[in-house]
Amino acid sequence: MRVLSGVQPSGRLHLGNYFGAIRPQLELQAGHECFYFIATYHALTSVERRADLEAYTLEVALSYLALGLDPARTVFFRQTDVPEVCELAWILSCQTPLGLLERGHSYKDKVAQGLSPNHGLFAYPVLQAADILIYKSHLVPVGQDQKQHIEMTQDIQGKFNLRYGDILVRPEPLIRPEVAVVPGIDGRKMSKSYGNAIELFGPLKEARKRIMSIVTDSTPVEEPKDPARCNVLALLRLMAEPQEVADWEDRYRRGGCGYGEAKKRVFELYEQTLGEARRRYEELSRHPEEVERVLADGGRRAREVARQTMREVRAACGLVNVLD
Ligand code: ADP
Ligand code: TRP
Image (cartoon, rainbow, N blue to C red):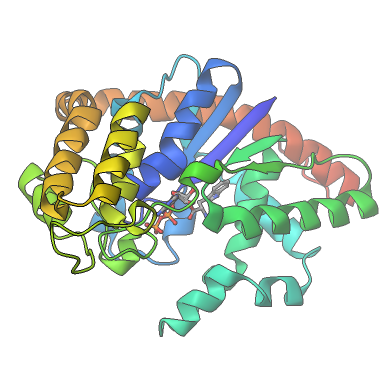
């Protein structure tokens, strides 16, 4: 089984990215052939400054390596080191009905937020389909918000194969229901664009401040509280052992336990869960040349696979490229 996923270097990574996407992706390394990449071309739809794109790309690379990506086992690369993916995106765009893209949630959300859409944002799902299909990926581990993009990929793959033969592989999304939507400090989905995120490797003081300001209701300390509706417990559940979670739920139901106490525990758990990775992150950030070596090596391995697929795709479509 080939597993593939990508993450955009469009901001600093947060707990939602970690629990919803990065951790499940890294767990799959044990039994599968994994391809994980930094979606630099996709980030161009929202990141305007060159220095930001460079900094976020390095941050994503450092974060994955610090969190346990094993470059000996997993092909880890920058999307831009495989430019063939843009060629495939064009070919696939000729199989993609406009109506399919017009129904895109992510595109519609961004337009609703007031962003004036460019063609890249509209065509974003086609490039994502090319990312997935060029490596003939079987499984795509992502958070819930990416489900529609994978379904669009399935549609596009189906149309391509119907016209040109059995060339591209139908991928399936892999979404863990228990971490599908990690809430941010205001209770909405944690997202860099909502300003409600707790960063993975930002300053500890800032993380503490954010955790202490998680929005709760105004139930007094002594009153019973509903553990199912608390944003603090939602984060605690992701990091604590099951017995500890059960104890907190019990204390909430009985009353006498304040939200402040639970928030302090969430901060401790945050430090424990990410402490080791934070040390590796700092260590690795002193060796950017090592990170560059890993990405370049991953890029070469990924490109080999992509070029082979492109030869098959071009031949099937009747496109000639005598140089590749
Ligand atoms: P953001 O919403 O902060 O811009 P991205 O869209 O870059 O995050 O998401 C990168 C990956 O992390 C995707 O697979 C996405 O599904 C996952 N992800 C992002 N936020 C969350 C969240 N709050 N809960 C679960 N998964 C998330
Ligand atoms: N759209 C994804 C996100 O915002 C990133 C991405 C780009 C991706 N290409 C992909 C994810 C291919 C999975 C597979 O999170």
